[in-house]
Length: 334
Image 1 (cartoon, rainbow, N blue to C red):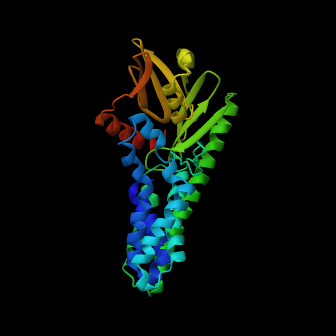
Image 2: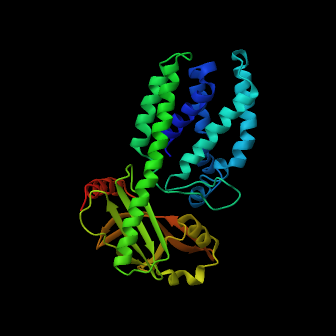
Image 3: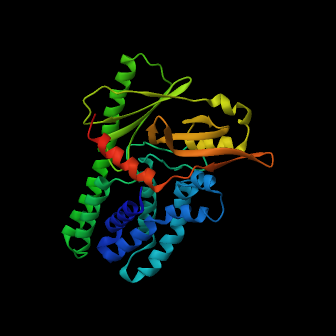
């Protein structure tokens, strides 16, 4: 999730464990520790190329193994800082570990997922919530701010803290339920149209759980669609040919293997003016005009010194603005 959501979650978890002893300092610890896993984004910039940066994000830094080891160090620091307040090492370790592990548990619900069991590569991803969702964050933040205004001995402090944790957790469960409803509707539509498919992915669009993105894999194509809970018409599927045969000769190239992993094999290949392009379908399309089909993530493939490489196609700010406008219109139903 976004940094603000992780700060609020970390602060609330820390408040629940240590708040009775150290009050709002527990919230400071939680906010700081809760952001540590996402520092991998900045660290990766110094060591990896842009594509590898995408691949390593939410890898080792989001794993239980990393949290288990890091908690020993951070708990020692917290315990030393709060020894005068009778915070022992066990309490510090529990607080730190829970702050870190709930960070990744929240990320598991997102469309990006997380490599919780690193070094195993597969990322866990329920894909029921977008990485930024105001309905998750804002009520949670309000409850935390109210809790902070109460003294550490005031029972209302923990009422508001647990209310925030409860509401945010309930919303996560709700997103899974909504996802289940959409999946059922899509499956019925596929059955009615006698479409044979091998994989179905349903996930929310930006900052909401009303409009959902749909990716369906068949033998030779991907069917893309969307569904809003305000829709009154049938679900329509748009066919995008895989064209994977265009890169058959490149299948052993490291960059191709890497892009396949990143895209979770949800990709199509296009060839425009002899320029091969790898299009990642996971985050939909920027535009779908007949003369201007743009995917959210595309990579130009090129050969340099007898080695194949890839470069992400630059997106214009206008593309993002237009996308949000189109999502808002589509969210209101068809």
